[in-house]
Amino acid sequence: MDIREKKDIIILAIESSCDETAAAVVKNGTGVLSNIIASQIEIHKRFGGVVPEIASRNHTLALPSVTESALSAAGLDYGDIDAVAVTYGAGLLGALLTGVSYAKGLSYALKKPLMAVSHVRGHIAANYIAHRDLTFPYVCALASGGHTAVLEVKDYGDIEVIGATKDDAAGEVFDKVARALGLPYPGGPKIQELAAEGKPVINFGKPYSGGNGYDFSFSGLKTAVINYIANSKGEFNAADVAASFQFAAVSRIKTTALKAAVDRGIKSVALAGGVGANLKLRAELTEACATAGIKAYFLPLELCTDNAAMIAAEAYFMIKKGKPFAATDLDAQANLAGYIG
Ligand code: KG4
Ligand code: ZN
Image (tube, rainbow, N blue to C red; front, side):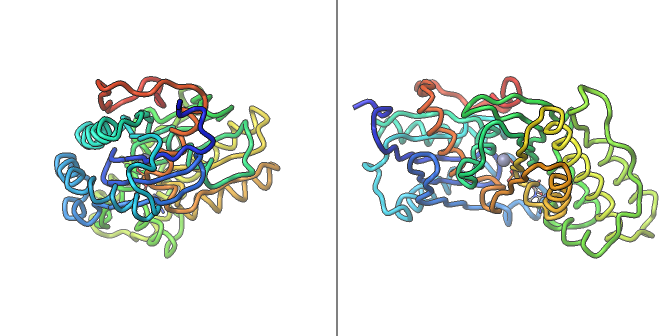
């Protein structure tokens, strides 16, 4: 029987694009039966950031047990799965390759079709799981360690990139500023914690105003903060630096997401990606959206940061939209065409 004709479709998804080895079992795109994440944060912490080769090696070690855990937490066996899904890009090439190879092996051995999923589209698909009342079109602000973009989600799979970062991603800059402040990896949550004790009294410059009016640049902000710390020769208030940096970073994301929604007459804004966990960003966006008569949607933390449930969700709607399954020559891609693949 063609899988597309089945009433229920159960997908086993694998995600290994950065430093989280993840597997999830999801029924009909939104019913999360299990969502297992083996984080490598402790392994990479001592290097102050993700070391790609070490990430790949640890994915290889973790993939079988994470997959078994996802199946057993779902109360299912390999035979109960209708399709396998995997993140094929964007991300660290070696890390992606481990997941793609493993998923190809599973698909071949189980004789189940394989869907290749864009990591960026996966982050957006986390909204399908969490927000049953979110209707198209909506603006999605995606801010993670690898991506920062504002997109219009018009339908399942029909996504327009309105603006994107021209250089660093927001999360990457949170992590680099944290490192400059002597905070451990990953820096986002640590900056948030420290910022709560400080005030945004330092001006780290104006946001990028080039591009199409919706694009981002975070590298100037990063340099401004790092230079400020270096020039202060130890005489600075770390909490104020964190608060001022966070204010500047969060404002850029909030303002751009809101501008996109207002300009297009769209009444919903959803936040996705690891930086979407940031409480200051959530608070600012909530307030700005309320003033503009727009509804803001936030994900639970486990669906903000990397996970495989979002990959299964995207794969389900790809299947429903008739997207072709992957062939056995599927390869990993560090960068995706058109930003979202
Ligand atoms: O989406 P994600 O798990 O991985 C990528 O696809 O990159 O995002 C990870 C990023 C890291 O840079 C981390 O520092 C950031 O999300 N992050 C945060 C917070 N929690 C995680 N940034 C700011 N505030 C947070 N609370
Ligand atoms: Zn991600």
